[in-house]
Amino acid sequence: MNGLRFETAAPLLRPDPNRVDVACFIGHVARRPGALPPTVIEGLAAQGWVVRDPGLARGWRPGPWRADAAEIEALLHLPVAVESWAAFDALFAWEARPLEVAGTRRCTTYLGAAVRSFFAHGGRRALIVRTGDPWPVLEPAGGRAAARDGRLAELLGPASSPVEPASWRGLGQLFGLPEVALVALPDLADACAADVATVAVALEPPDSPEVFVECSEGREMPVREDVGLRSLAPPRCDEAGFLAWRDAIATVRGRIARHHREMELVAALPLPRADLRSTAVAGTVWAQADFAAWLARAGILAAGIDDEKDERGRGRPESAFVQFAWPWLRTRHGADLPSLLEPPDGLLAGLLARNALARGTFRSVAGTPLAAVHGSEPVLSWSGVAETPSERLAARVCVVAPAVDGWALRSDVSATALEPWRAGGVSRLLGAVLRAARRAGEAALFEANGPALWTEVRRSLEQTLLAFWREGALGGASAEQAFVVRCDRSTMSQNDLDGGRVRAEIALLPVAAVERITVVLELSGGGAALPVREVA
Image (tube, rainbow, N blue to C red):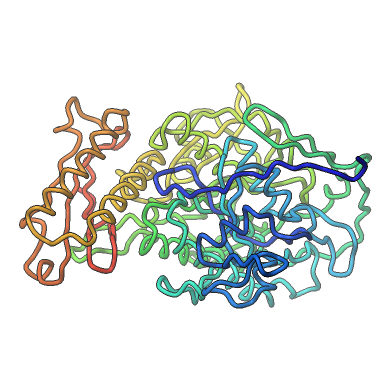
């Protein structure tokens, strides 16, 4: 019969807080026209954003946390789970970013490019938080700076409260997404970039329509190049923009440190303008040859970013849960972006997700070959000599660079200045341990506080760490050498007992760390909080 089409409905995507490969992408992308699929409605209903109502034509009405039906229909500031590129493509017009304010030409959004790279490099599940439509690539002079604060507010959701879902915007949606392990804001660098000069550019359309296929490991995503995009400059930050980006990263880092210690921020360093200067050292012009030194002078990678102290005056590893990626890349499926360059955060998130599924999140992804990459801005040299600028940068940043054996991810590190937490696998292992501990704490949340509960908590944590040790995540010839768990009167003060708090102390030896790491976990009446207290 003409016009009759059958579609197999995908099953409802159930969240699994025990997974450590789920990524959340927060950013600007247009909603593709059309009714919400039943699986999306069911997912939103499960979280309280909508209520199923068969009596209505659309089958739902706004739930207790969101009153605006149009906002829900637009999937604005709502978490939507997708498990394939095809599912993302069906919901979001990722290729509809305007090149000019009043123009008709379009290119790919950075959020769309990041999700595409995530699935192309092995990712299997992502949460998408749409914060609005994309802004034009070319804007009137001063337009970007004027709109910067508003765009950052949409991404960061500064007014979001942990106990008020109606207030959750942008990053605030993480309060209701315990399954998320990796967080990316692909538009952040672009939101902080300086004005791109509005020049007459000969924009030539592709010689044939773009064709995309659902990506899976080992398969290419053919993209026809729009050659006119070569002439468009990528987003670059001037001094004010770079400081805005730095402050935004500090905001995200602080939010993760306070509320989401089991999550990892994956962020692309922005491209600096050639005249960018460091405010830390007046008159110091950015030198492409030694980006690491410039980042240190600007306060991005200096010890100061980790100089917050706990109550005993010891360093706190907030930046251990941040992984920066550099440089921007030219890939086989990024020919529809300005200057044909994409930020590397989506690619890194995909590699980390695939690694978590295939080998274990605690194992390093350094050395992974990247067949899809064929260029970068800037191009980094890699000789294996530790004194080169690229090698120094790779001590704190996940670096993609070419060598005689092709392009590869040359380092897998966190941004922290604390050596025991430096290896990327160590920071992700601690995130996985904290995630497992939170689940154990939630199960015991309403038990009576006393020796019986302390024994139950200790045994649960020991079983969790024993499983990590057997998988090779912890060092030591025996479990006793690999970890120690204490949960008794020695870990709690009388004030803790009077306040109904249970504290457990874990000392563990990650296989890649040079010394033992100690964390203190706290279970209180308000929920299972897992603050990192010390590094030993």
